Image 1: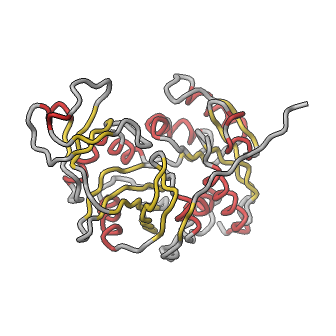
Image 2: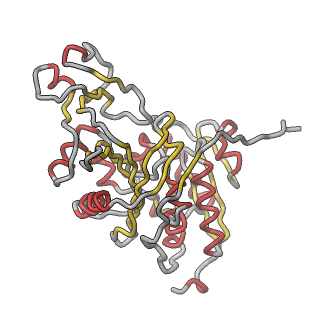
Image 3: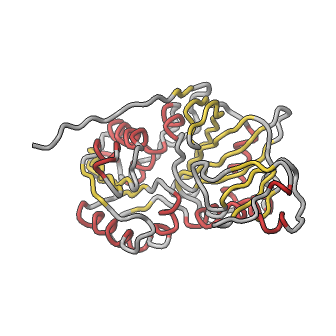
Length: 328
């Protein structure tokens, strides 16, 4: 099917849209370049207080991912609006969408998830073990119980939730004696790496081919999300992405991983996110337009995905706002 023969209208749903205005605008920009008339449905627990919901074409309230109604109500929206593409954005919803792929497919909706990568990346201890098993360099990592019982650790070490995100609940322990004595959720202890922190965004097309790998150095971070960064080509990071993809049964879609590179070039990967990363807009502006490529796949257009992004693209985030007049 050629581009001229395909429908020029698509509807997508941005799940847990929150403040992800940059991601939403990346899809709109990609749609304009492709000649697609795009309708964006944005969902959130409280759309009235979501910036992305405010600028979407339609916004809808859905329960939290922990609510049993979450998938039912999202599926109903996909049916109501004829959604072709559903893009998750937060970790708690990923396994729910992964388990409901067939249900959404029956509605004609592609959910942008890789179930295998989601399963491997949900628990940071499992992630570290899997990465080490396939040959990816990782910091020494154990569950907190094992370390308190004498398992080997290199100090100082990072203590963090096994299922955490956005830098929640992270602390540093200088020695084994500094570890917390109680905890309310599964925790890991991980060797603290010293060096520059990087996020590596990668895109795998719907045929399982790794199309591009875009590392950016995280110059400044706020609440776990990059606010100052610069794209740089680092062959070691592409090698790691290729290794990850080669060990997945059916890779597809965007993902990112985080790593530390020491002054002498040693790399340690400490996290994988099976979704768009918070710093994705930097890759998009550098020319790695994952959002556009996903829309092209949904419209059955020929893929333009390539590894020709701009090195040295910088991002300096700042606070902006969406203003709304009161309803009459």
